[in-house]
Image (tube, rainbow, N blue to C red; front, side, top):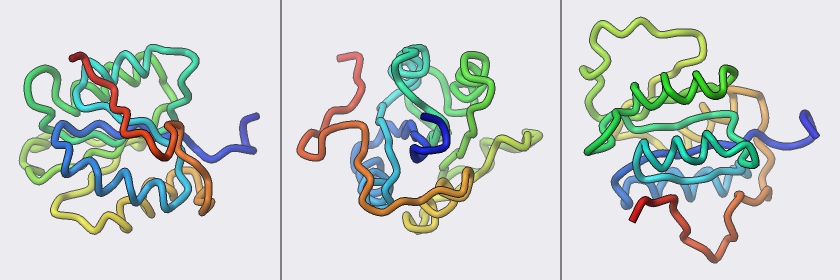
Length: 145
C-alpha cells in the first residue's frame, strides 16, 4: 500500500475560519487529510493505529492545552517518521528553537497554495482529484465536545 497512496496530513488549527482555507486547498491539491481543532484531539488521531498520518500541519498557538510545538514533540514520540509543518502568525514563539530536519515553518498570513505546495513537496506527491479521508459533504472535525 505504501508508495501507491498520497501522503496523509493531519491539519490542527483551533480557528475554524483559518482552518477552512488550507483544508480546501489540501482537498484541491489531492491531499488526504484529517482535521482537529486542538492538541488533545490531534493526539487521539495520532494514537489511533487505523488512522494514517504522515505529516502534521499545526498552528503554534492552539489555545488552551498544548501548543503546536508541544503537540509535535508528543506526536513524534508516537510516530517517529512524522513530518511537521508549523503554521503561525507569531514566529517569535519559536525563538531559540533549533529546527530538526523533519520540521518546517510557514508564517501567516500565508498563501494557502504555497502551503499546499510545501506539504506536497515533503514526499513529492500531489495528485489532483484525490479525496480527503472525510466525506466531501461532511465537515467533521475531531473535537472533544
